[in-house]
Image (cartoon, rainbow, N blue to C red):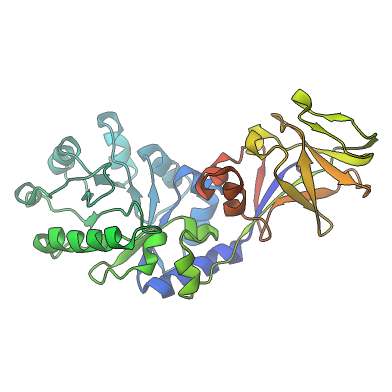
Length: 346
Protein backbone atom coordinates (compact mmCIF):
# COMPACT_ATOMS: atom_id res chain seq x y z
CA UNK A 1 0.00 0.00 0.00
CA UNK A 2 1.29 3.47 -0.89
CA UNK A 3 0.96 6.16 1.74
CA UNK A 4 0.56 9.88 1.46
CA UNK A 5 2.92 11.55 3.90
CA UNK A 6 5.75 9.37 5.19
CA UNK A 7 8.19 9.56 8.08
CA UNK A 8 10.93 7.10 7.21
CA UNK A 9 13.25 6.23 10.10
CA UNK A 10 16.61 4.49 9.70
CA UNK A 11 17.06 1.57 12.10
CA UNK A 12 20.81 1.52 11.53
CA UNK A 13 21.09 5.19 12.50
CA UNK A 14 19.20 4.70 15.77
CA UNK A 15 21.33 1.70 16.71
CA UNK A 16 24.56 3.52 15.80
CA UNK A 17 23.50 6.49 17.94
CA UNK A 18 22.94 4.26 20.98
CA UNK A 19 26.35 2.62 20.60
CA UNK A 20 28.10 5.95 20.07
CA UNK A 21 26.39 7.53 23.10
CA UNK A 22 27.31 4.60 25.35
CA UNK A 23 30.91 4.71 24.16
CA UNK A 24 31.08 8.49 24.61
CA UNK A 25 29.58 8.38 28.12
CA UNK A 26 31.23 5.17 29.27
CA UNK A 27 27.92 4.16 30.85
CA UNK A 28 24.79 2.21 30.09
CA UNK A 29 21.71 4.04 28.85
CA UNK A 30 18.20 4.84 29.98
CA UNK A 31 16.55 5.31 26.57
CA UNK A 32 13.80 7.91 26.79
CA UNK A 33 10.82 6.83 24.67
CA UNK A 34 8.13 8.99 26.26
CA UNK A 35 5.68 10.90 24.05
CA UNK A 36 5.71 8.05 21.52
CA UNK A 37 9.53 8.14 21.36
CA UNK A 38 9.43 11.86 20.62
CA UNK A 39 6.95 11.14 17.86
CA UNK A 40 9.00 8.42 16.16
CA UNK A 41 6.99 5.46 17.48
CA UNK A 42 7.65 4.11 20.99
CA UNK A 43 6.81 0.45 20.36
CA UNK A 44 8.97 0.27 17.25
CA UNK A 45 11.90 2.12 18.79
CA UNK A 46 11.79 0.06 21.98
CA UNK A 47 11.64 -3.25 20.10
CA UNK A 48 14.59 -2.16 17.97
CA UNK A 49 16.74 -1.07 20.91
CA UNK A 50 15.81 -3.70 23.52
CA UNK A 51 18.33 -6.34 22.34
CA UNK A 52 21.25 -3.91 22.69
CA UNK A 53 23.50 -4.52 25.68
CA UNK A 54 23.89 -0.76 26.07
CA UNK A 55 20.23 -0.35 27.09
CA UNK A 56 19.53 -0.80 30.80
CA UNK A 57 16.10 0.91 31.04
CA UNK A 58 13.46 2.53 28.93
CA UNK A 59 11.89 5.71 30.29
CA UNK A 60 8.33 6.95 29.81
CA UNK A 61 6.32 9.84 31.27
CA UNK A 62 3.27 8.00 32.60
CA UNK A 63 2.25 4.52 33.77
CA UNK A 64 -0.09 4.26 30.78
CA UNK A 65 2.83 4.74 28.39
CA UNK A 66 4.72 2.02 30.24
CA UNK A 67 1.75 -0.36 30.15
CA UNK A 68 1.53 0.03 26.37
CA UNK A 69 5.17 -1.01 26.01
CA UNK A 70 4.63 -4.06 28.19
CA UNK A 71 1.56 -5.03 26.16
CA UNK A 72 3.74 -4.70 23.05
CA UNK A 73 6.16 -7.26 24.51
CA UNK A 74 8.92 -5.06 25.96
CA UNK A 75 10.62 -6.86 28.85
CA UNK A 76 13.47 -4.63 29.99
CA UNK A 77 12.88 -2.36 33.01
CA UNK A 78 10.69 0.68 32.37
CA UNK A 79 11.13 3.85 34.40
CA UNK A 80 8.12 6.16 34.86
CA UNK A 81 9.78 9.57 35.05
CA UNK A 82 7.02 11.77 36.42
CA UNK A 83 5.58 9.75 39.23
CA UNK A 84 2.08 8.38 39.49
CA UNK A 85 -1.39 9.12 40.79
CA UNK A 86 -3.05 6.82 43.34
CA UNK A 87 -5.36 5.19 40.78
CA UNK A 88 -2.33 4.34 38.61
CA UNK A 89 -0.79 2.07 41.26
CA UNK A 90 -2.35 -1.09 39.72
CA UNK A 91 -0.58 -0.30 36.44
CA UNK A 92 2.75 -0.14 38.24
CA UNK A 93 2.20 -3.54 39.83
CA UNK A 94 0.58 -5.38 36.92
CA UNK A 95 3.09 -4.18 34.32
CA UNK A 96 6.20 -4.14 36.55
CA UNK A 97 6.88 -0.46 36.10
CA UNK A 98 9.47 1.41 38.18
CA UNK A 99 8.20 4.84 39.25
CA UNK A 100 10.39 7.84 39.93
CA UNK A 101 9.19 9.10 43.30
CA UNK A 102 9.43 12.79 44.12
CA UNK A 103 7.02 13.50 46.99
CA UNK A 104 5.97 12.01 50.30
CA UNK A 105 2.58 10.76 49.12
CA UNK A 106 4.20 8.68 46.37
CA UNK A 107 6.98 7.57 48.67
CA UNK A 108 4.65 6.25 51.37
CA UNK A 109 2.69 4.29 48.77
CA UNK A 110 5.75 2.54 47.32
CA UNK A 111 7.14 1.87 50.81
CA UNK A 112 3.90 0.30 52.00
CA UNK A 113 3.37 -1.71 48.83
CA UNK A 114 7.08 -2.60 48.36
CA UNK A 115 7.12 -1.35 44.76
CA UNK A 116 10.71 -0.89 43.46
CA UNK A 117 11.33 2.79 42.74
CA UNK A 118 13.88 5.48 41.93
CA UNK A 119 14.09 8.55 44.15
CA UNK A 120 14.11 12.00 42.52
CA UNK A 121 16.26 14.71 44.13
CA UNK A 122 15.64 18.27 42.98
CA UNK A 123 19.08 19.88 42.61
CA UNK A 124 17.89 22.79 40.51
CA UNK A 125 15.12 21.87 38.08
CA UNK A 126 12.47 23.23 40.43
CA UNK A 127 9.82 20.68 39.45
CA UNK A 128 9.50 17.21 40.94
CA UNK A 129 11.78 15.80 43.61
CA UNK A 130 12.95 16.08 47.22
CA UNK A 131 15.24 18.97 48.10
CA UNK A 132 16.78 16.68 50.72
CA UNK A 133 16.18 12.92 50.73
CA UNK A 134 14.23 11.63 53.75
CA UNK A 135 17.08 9.31 54.72
CA UNK A 136 15.47 7.68 57.75
CA UNK A 137 12.24 6.91 55.90
CA UNK A 138 14.18 5.41 53.00
CA UNK A 139 15.72 2.79 55.28
CA UNK A 140 12.35 1.00 55.41
CA UNK A 141 12.61 0.07 51.74
CA UNK A 142 15.57 1.68 49.95
CA UNK A 143 15.23 2.91 46.38
CA UNK A 144 16.65 0.90 43.50
CA UNK A 145 18.03 4.12 42.01
CA UNK A 146 18.42 7.83 42.66
CA UNK A 147 18.23 10.55 40.03
CA UNK A 148 18.25 14.27 39.42
CA UNK A 149 17.77 16.39 36.31
CA UNK A 150 19.65 19.19 34.55
CA UNK A 151 17.53 22.18 33.47
CA UNK A 152 20.26 24.10 31.64
CA UNK A 153 23.20 21.83 30.82
CA UNK A 154 23.40 23.33 27.34
CA UNK A 155 23.67 26.96 28.46
CA UNK A 156 24.95 27.23 32.05
CA UNK A 157 28.06 25.24 32.92
CA UNK A 158 28.52 26.70 36.42
CA UNK A 159 24.93 25.95 37.46
CA UNK A 160 25.18 22.40 36.09
CA UNK A 161 28.50 21.64 37.78
CA UNK A 162 27.03 22.88 41.06
CA UNK A 163 24.17 20.40 40.55
CA UNK A 164 26.63 17.57 40.03
CA UNK A 165 28.40 18.42 43.28
CA UNK A 166 25.10 18.80 45.15
CA UNK A 167 23.80 15.46 43.87
CA UNK A 168 27.03 13.77 44.93
CA UNK A 169 26.77 15.25 48.45
CA UNK A 170 23.10 14.30 48.86
CA UNK A 171 23.62 10.74 47.61
CA UNK A 172 26.65 10.00 49.83
CA UNK A 173 24.45 8.60 52.63
CA UNK A 174 22.75 6.40 50.01
CA UNK A 175 25.84 4.56 48.84
CA UNK A 176 25.03 0.99 47.91
CA UNK A 177 22.09 2.08 45.77
CA UNK A 178 22.24 0.17 42.47
CA UNK A 179 21.66 3.06 40.05
CA UNK A 180 22.62 6.74 40.10
CA UNK A 181 21.81 9.00 37.14
CA UNK A 182 21.75 12.73 36.47
CA UNK A 183 23.05 13.26 32.92
CA UNK A 184 20.63 13.93 30.08
CA UNK A 185 21.58 14.35 26.40
CA UNK A 186 23.08 17.83 26.86
CA UNK A 187 24.65 16.67 30.11
CA UNK A 188 26.78 14.06 28.37
CA UNK A 189 29.56 16.65 28.09
CA UNK A 190 29.93 16.75 31.90
CA UNK A 191 31.71 14.30 34.14
CA UNK A 192 29.60 12.76 36.88
CA UNK A 193 32.08 10.05 37.85
CA UNK A 194 29.95 8.59 40.63
CA UNK A 195 26.91 7.81 38.43
CA UNK A 196 26.49 4.67 36.34
CA UNK A 197 23.65 5.48 33.90
CA UNK A 198 22.89 8.28 31.44
CA UNK A 199 19.31 9.23 30.60
CA UNK A 200 19.11 10.29 26.97
CA UNK A 201 16.33 11.13 24.54
CA UNK A 202 17.12 13.74 21.90
CA UNK A 203 20.56 12.34 21.08
CA UNK A 204 19.05 8.95 20.24
CA UNK A 205 17.02 10.65 17.54
CA UNK A 206 20.03 12.26 15.91
CA UNK A 207 19.91 15.82 17.25
CA UNK A 208 22.64 17.59 19.22
CA UNK A 209 21.18 19.27 22.30
CA UNK A 210 24.51 21.03 22.84
CA UNK A 211 27.12 22.02 20.22
CA UNK A 212 29.79 20.80 22.65
CA UNK A 213 28.70 17.22 22.03
CA UNK A 214 29.80 17.42 18.40
CA UNK A 215 32.93 19.37 19.30
CA UNK A 216 33.94 16.67 21.79
CA UNK A 217 33.51 13.92 19.22
CA UNK A 218 30.06 12.41 19.71
CA UNK A 219 28.92 11.26 16.28
CA UNK A 220 25.17 11.13 15.77
CA UNK A 221 23.31 10.06 12.66
CA UNK A 222 20.06 11.77 11.71
CA UNK A 223 17.61 8.90 11.10
CA UNK A 224 14.56 10.72 9.72
CA UNK A 225 13.14 11.64 6.35
CA UNK A 226 9.67 13.17 6.17
CA UNK A 227 8.12 13.45 2.71
CA UNK A 228 4.80 14.16 1.05
CA UNK A 229 3.47 13.63 -2.50
CA UNK A 230 2.46 16.38 -4.89
CA UNK A 231 -1.32 16.14 -5.25
CA UNK A 232 -1.93 18.79 -7.88
CA UNK A 233 0.23 20.86 -10.24
CA UNK A 234 -0.99 24.03 -11.92
CA UNK A 235 0.46 27.16 -13.49
CA UNK A 236 -0.86 30.43 -12.10
CA UNK A 237 -0.40 33.94 -13.50
CA UNK A 238 1.51 36.75 -11.85
CA UNK A 239 -0.41 38.32 -8.95
CA UNK A 240 -2.37 35.18 -8.07
CA UNK A 241 -3.33 34.85 -4.40
CA UNK A 242 -2.20 31.73 -2.58
CA UNK A 243 -4.26 30.19 0.25
CA UNK A 244 -6.40 31.72 3.02
CA UNK A 245 -5.98 35.39 3.71
CA UNK A 246 -4.07 36.01 0.49
CA UNK A 247 -0.88 36.57 2.47
CA UNK A 248 1.18 35.68 -0.58
CA UNK A 249 0.85 36.80 -4.20
CA UNK A 250 2.91 35.37 -7.02
CA UNK A 251 5.55 37.83 -8.19
CA UNK A 252 5.58 36.14 -11.59
CA UNK A 253 3.76 33.35 -13.41
CA UNK A 254 4.75 30.13 -11.68
CA UNK A 255 4.15 26.41 -11.33
CA UNK A 256 2.67 25.59 -7.94
CA UNK A 257 2.24 22.19 -6.31
CA UNK A 258 -0.19 21.21 -3.57
CA UNK A 259 1.05 18.75 -0.92
CA UNK A 260 -1.18 16.97 1.65
CA UNK A 261 0.75 18.17 4.67
CA UNK A 262 -0.71 20.84 6.93
CA UNK A 263 -0.83 21.86 10.54
CA UNK A 264 -2.83 18.74 11.45
CA UNK A 265 0.22 16.80 10.24
CA UNK A 266 2.65 18.86 12.31
CA UNK A 267 3.50 21.77 10.02
CA UNK A 268 2.96 24.77 12.28
CA UNK A 269 1.22 27.74 10.63
CA UNK A 270 4.22 29.85 11.64
CA UNK A 271 6.12 28.12 8.84
CA UNK A 272 3.89 29.85 6.29
CA UNK A 273 6.06 31.75 3.80
CA UNK A 274 9.19 30.69 5.70
CA UNK A 275 9.88 27.01 5.07
CA UNK A 276 11.49 25.33 2.05
CA UNK A 277 11.10 21.78 0.78
CA UNK A 278 13.36 19.70 -1.45
CA UNK A 279 12.42 18.32 -4.84
CA UNK A 280 15.00 16.62 -7.08
CA UNK A 281 17.88 18.07 -5.04
CA UNK A 282 16.64 21.66 -5.35
CA UNK A 283 14.84 23.66 -2.68
CA UNK A 284 11.52 25.44 -3.20
CA UNK A 285 9.50 27.62 -0.79
CA UNK A 286 6.18 26.87 0.85
CA UNK A 287 4.02 29.91 0.11
CA UNK A 288 0.75 31.24 1.46
CA UNK A 289 -0.86 30.19 4.70
CA UNK A 290 -0.36 26.56 5.68
CA UNK A 291 -3.81 25.06 6.23
CA UNK A 292 -5.06 22.10 8.23
CA UNK A 293 -4.50 19.55 5.48
CA UNK A 294 -2.60 21.22 2.64
CA UNK A 295 0.40 23.39 1.84
CA UNK A 296 1.43 25.10 -1.40
CA UNK A 297 4.93 24.95 -2.89
CA UNK A 298 6.12 27.53 -5.42
CA UNK A 299 8.20 25.74 -8.05
CA UNK A 300 8.73 28.85 -10.19
CA UNK A 301 9.63 27.83 -13.75
CA UNK A 302 10.24 24.20 -12.75
CA UNK A 303 7.22 22.06 -13.55
CA UNK A 304 6.99 19.20 -11.02
CA UNK A 305 5.21 15.91 -11.62
CA UNK A 306 2.05 14.96 -9.77
CA UNK A 307 2.61 11.98 -7.49
CA UNK A 308 6.31 12.64 -6.98
CA UNK A 309 7.45 13.48 -3.48
CA UNK A 310 8.91 16.55 -1.82
CA UNK A 311 11.07 16.19 1.28
CA UNK A 312 10.30 18.38 4.27
CA UNK A 313 12.78 16.96 6.79
CA UNK A 314 16.04 15.07 6.33
CA UNK A 315 19.76 15.55 7.02
CA UNK A 316 19.73 18.81 5.05
CA UNK A 317 16.89 20.28 7.10
CA UNK A 318 16.54 18.68 10.52
CA UNK A 319 13.95 19.13 13.25
CA UNK A 320 16.32 21.57 14.94
CA UNK A 321 16.51 23.66 11.76
CA UNK A 322 12.73 23.90 11.62
CA UNK A 323 12.64 24.78 15.30
CA UNK A 324 15.07 27.66 14.85
CA UNK A 325 12.83 29.12 12.13
CA UNK A 326 9.97 29.68 14.54
CA UNK A 327 11.81 30.11 17.82
CA UNK A 328 11.07 26.78 19.44
CA UNK A 329 12.94 23.52 20.20
CA UNK A 330 13.24 20.31 18.15
CA UNK A 331 11.29 18.32 20.75
CA UNK A 332 8.16 20.32 19.92
CA UNK A 333 8.56 19.79 16.18
CA UNK A 334 9.12 16.03 16.56
CA UNK A 335 6.18 15.46 18.86
CA UNK A 336 3.86 17.55 16.68
CA UNK A 337 4.07 15.24 13.66
CA UNK A 338 0.51 13.93 13.31
CA UNK A 339 -0.74 10.36 13.18
CA UNK A 340 -1.70 10.69 9.49
CA UNK A 341 2.02 10.71 8.71
CA UNK A 342 2.91 7.03 8.37
CA UNK A 343 6.02 5.94 10.29
CA UNK A 344 8.12 3.40 8.42
CA UNK A 345 11.27 1.86 9.91
CA UNK A 346 13.77 0.76 7.31
